[in-house]
Length: 248
Image 1 (tube, rainbow, N blue to C red):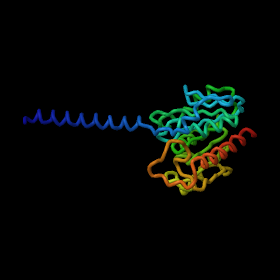
Image 2 (image 1 turned 60 degrees about the horizontal axis):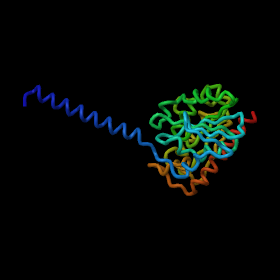
Image 3 (image 1 turned 135 degrees about the vertical axis):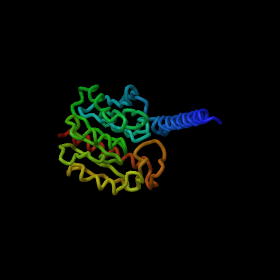
Image 4 (image 1 turned 90 degrees about the vertical axis):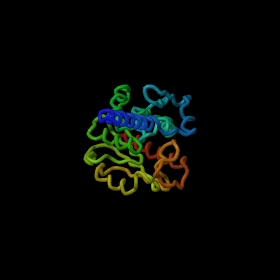
């Protein structure tokens, strides 16, 4: 084979491999976890909560507090995967907004809360939260942001370099003992990055995937309590935080 043709063949093969790998990458990015049936069941409006899906998944209580809650989903999890706890928080009177993230990754749109806050000028105080990667991005957004009065971390901790330790903000960190992805050691290490008044809430027997409704997760531990029981504790801790911000 002539040298010029040889290199043309190699170039063509290289391009084909690159295109194939890019296609596989796009398929991986676009394939998010599927919400469980319980999540789908929480998406219907009723007399106490109105549910809308555009531009964000939003749960609007009939009688709303002046405090609102923005929640960033965990990595590769759709907003609908957190519909049951979001709805429960809204049923307690707090506007709750769960934005979808590009390719399910909050790190690609960490400032989404800017648009949400602008869209609801009637809300006087905001609490932001998130699960796993979403919680890390929520912490990063809250750092130094005067628009945020509270932070709810679900199996999450601030990224390296993000320090809220001297910030006048209410923080609650909820973690689970059987979490194989956000471990207790990692949660403990995050204490120095958070205010000394931070409330740490341990869920005995809970795991990482139990913070949402999207099925099991690779690398996670085995939960010894039901998802419903874990969710009840997560919601209770988050409502305590919202009430604290409301009373400030």
